[in-house]
Image (cartoon, rainbow, N blue to C red):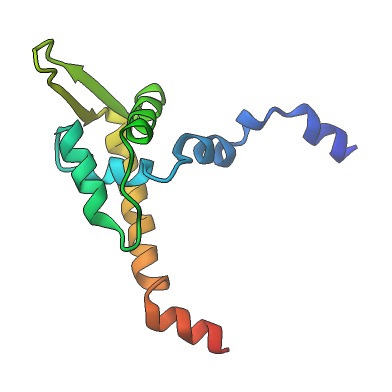
Length: 126
């Protein structure tokens, strides 16, 4: 009976699954984190992603554009096109995106506490 009931409930009814789908992607959390300090242009976002993680490969323009479009579609960021030549576009957090920053901060703090090199080695030794 429980198995039948579980199949009847759509996946989007689960907030964890919906959240996971919204933030899935290699760069979305980092983009939101970079935008917490204010609006950024495409190039500023790209250079911010390049200096972040050790061993990460350079983000391609296609991937960055896809991540920005997905974040815009999910309502976390807003895209402002100034209608100039050359193109000037800024990205900023929406109200929903700003409410998400403490979640990313908590993930960052958890990572600092639990993913540091000495702690990882201590857990492996046990």
